[in-house]
Amino acid sequence: MSSFHGEILSTAQARVLQRLGSTLGAKRFYLGGGTAIALHLAHRESHDFDWFTESELADPLSLASELRASGCALEALETSRGTLHGHAEQVKMSFIEYRYPLLAPLDPWPEMGCLVASLDDLACMKLAAIAQRGYKRDFIDLHALGLKHCPLEVMLEHYERKYRADPNALLYALSYFGDADPQPSPKLLWKVDWEEIKNTVRGWVKQVS
Image 1: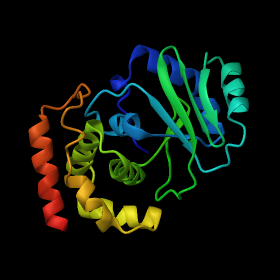
Image 2: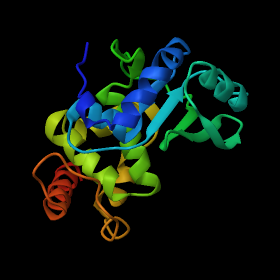
Image 3: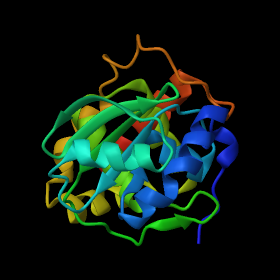
Image 4: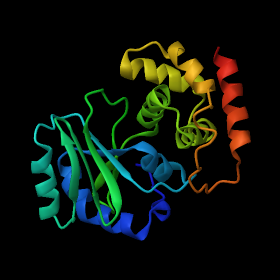
């Protein structure tokens, strides 16, 4: 069982999670995204919650109503089949139907009653995010995963297993920082700067190319 760094959460995040964690855990939603990685590694602050489920999310508004009934003042901002975006107490949240198989068991967080994705799955999801957009925070997360979890080569092997996709197609995206360079950085909790992160990731890509 993993231990989580709840200190990276804001007061509002912790309060919202305490109110909806057990409801979402019972429905087999799990926490992913940058906040989940930060809860594992404590490398940066992250202010939103991204929830995923392998089950069908056919009626997002029904889910929103159920979460409000659990005491979470969730306001739905955007819905479509399989997706709900909203916020509660200024904490942004997304709920997403995500049918890709989990590589490892979900990690329970008993204090919050919720489930958190494993670092193996989070690394795959982070690589997929970089392939689509390459935000600065995504490279920061990848750097932390590579230092504290597993080498990039292993992440790429996991990616191929999870998505049945060629990981070599990712290598250009992993080396392109043009979109990320001008973006603001989240507050880092490790002593590292952006140039160091880029140079480290470039080195990892060269090793696997």
